Length: 317
Figure 1 (cartoon, rainbow, N blue to C red):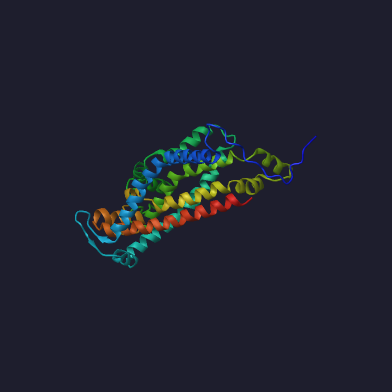
Figure 2 (cartoon, one colour):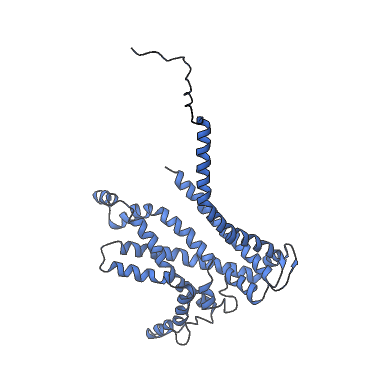
């Protein structure tokens, strides 16, 4: 016969002789888990501190000083930042960086998506084609920029020879600011399309075939399947690529420096090349550090946006 336990006080289990109490065992387990977590996190935190936090703090301190790098320098406070915001070359470099970002990010994402859709289908030799598209990504940025220099040389370059073959005039790829920026954009697109293609390929292969089968049963055309199934399902990949490509565009250096060195004039100078010019050619390292800090703030804004919208995507649904 079952006994009624309603109203009775729950008894705590009696301590086993020779064993520590429950609370002490739980405390010991938490300490062991914390020790394991710090053991795994410690090396990474040490690397982040030594190679990221400390240089960042030193760069900020340097931005408040006037120094050539070979002397002790002097404290100038926010003078470098006041000079920076009144410097027309800085704003020209900032505008060039923004133009470069706008001209490269949407195009490389669109071409990468198109290549991913094409190479995800039944295509003869698609592994070879994928490798060829991705190959510039694994080559050094300086090497691809040197190839770009040979392609867009005004006198012996392949681009002008191709244009003249079709009866078109040769372009001033190195002496005209607009054409020089276009040559940088083209070389960058050639380099980065492979990265976008790989990310989109991973996203495409994660889409369930049942979705396309259901769409076909509903009478959807190929374009409607792409617009109503593929594009929405690739939303996380698109968002990731958008942020990463914007960050890459604000950090571009090697391609610009090798192709044009920021010229003609400052027509193709971007923030990083202008910081390099001030830090290592003019030897105004405090001023160059101030440019770097401004660039860091801009990149952090995009990183914060990525964190915010990624968290929203995780919580939706």
